[in-house]
Amino acid sequence: MTKTQLQKAMNKDVYTYVENNFPEFVIDHSEGYGRVYFIDSTSPNPANDSIQYHQSDHTLCTLNWASDKVKAVEQELESWINALLKQYQ
Image 1 (cartoon, rainbow, N blue to C red):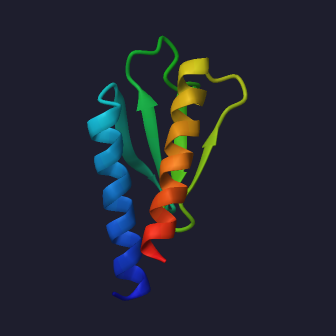
Image 2 (cartoon, rainbow, N blue to C red):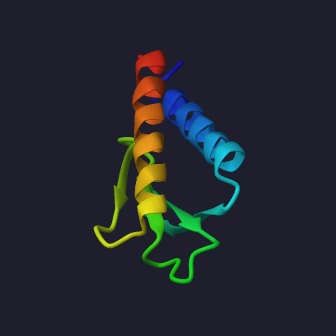
C-alpha cells in the first residue's frame, strides 16, 4: 500500500471504531484542513465536549474544560489509535 492508501485505511478504521463503540458521538467532517470532530451529541454543550482528530498524523485534542466522559473517550481512542498505528507500520 502507498502512504496515502495507508492513511485512508487508518482513518476509515478510526471512524468505524467511533461509530461502533461511541454511537452518541457524531462525526463532523465540516472543518476541513485534515481535521475531523467527534462531537458528543448528548452533551448540553457539544462545542466544548468534542474531540478533534487530525487525519494525517492521527492525533487527538480535547479542550481542558471538556467533560470527564469526553476525556475518558479521548484516552481510550488514543490508546486504540496507537495500537492501530503499530499494526499499519
